[in-house]
Amino acid sequence: MTPVTQSRKDGTIKPDCRYFLGDRPCHYHKELGVRCSDCAAYSPGKIRILIIKLGAMGDVLRTTSILPALAKHYEKPHITWVTRKESMDLLWNNPFVDSLVEYGADSVIRLQVETFDLVINPEASKESAALVSIAQGKVKKGLGLSCEGSIFPFNPEAEEIFHMGLLDDMKKRNRKTYEQLICQLSGLPYERIPPILCLTDDEIQFTERFREEKKIQRNKTVVGINTGGGTRWLLKRWTVEGFMKVIERLSREKDVQILLMGGPVEAEINRDILARFGQQVIDTGCLNPVRRFSTLVNLCDILVTGDSLALHIGLALRKRMVVLLGPTSEAEVDLYELGKKITAEMDCLCCYRQTCDKHPNCMESISVDTVFQAIKEQIGFLGTR
Image (cartoon, rainbow, N blue to C red):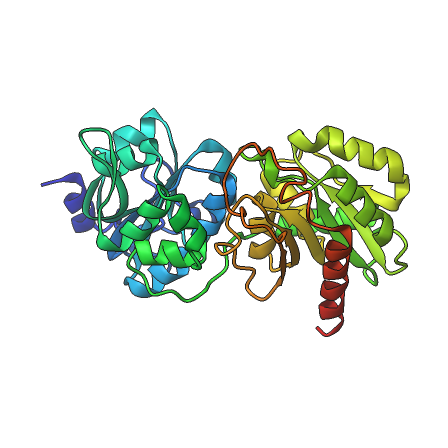
């Protein structure tokens, strides 16, 4: 008789419960003192699902859009998610994720022991594809790694995203959003659900304390200017001159307050902006951990950003958006009727190049007038709420 069977017979421990942790007390026992035998929160998982998503933090966050579809399509799923350390906090406190596993040697060992009814990997990296291939899964969807070291699609629904990763012309022709493609790859009906990021009460209270400390007025529109563009494609960032000219125009608007945002890579850029505008701009800092950064995004009524993590955080928090796009796919970005996408009129968009010899390039070609007018439009939408 296995330990699991014995536990069920004794009625003291229920390892099939979605809240069971195995190596420590569950939340309900720790906080309320209840035991398995009389716990009203007992919720046995009917199907075990593994999601592997290791890549860019923004892509990890927007992949959460498939979670409600999984919960609706499968009866009482128990969902385990494997990701890198830097993305763990983005998935923390997500009500759909039952087990969050940090990628590393320990996770590789676990995947060779635990069994799953369904394994999903939407990513073409060899690391994530290898994890899917070694995972003990009855059904696998997405991309795997062959014995020869090649990426391959497990299921027909994954073939489109597989080929788009290999063929530039196919990537450019695509008109499906990332979320559509991920639902398709996973064999799920597409319901156009935004990313999911759940702030805690303490984090919301921090937002309010920051508001009071920086004297951010509730009767003014808060516009967040995120100068970040990620680190992989530096061409995704708009020009410093462009940001400065937009901030200059916004600073003349009596009913607008400006938050300056960015990450460590933008420290120098933001320092130059602050030196020019001083108290006309509220500095949020460039060294915020991701959840702290999210609470600061939550202060914004409108967020101006490129294709970066801030974009997906803003969508998850249902902010009005002005999004500047160039070398990455405009079609794959869904703003869920929350804003406007701005691109230059150039034939070479969606090139995914890390360098460019064109001057002006696609991001340099985005005009200050266009961005400023888009922000004014979003302010108008706020007035109709």
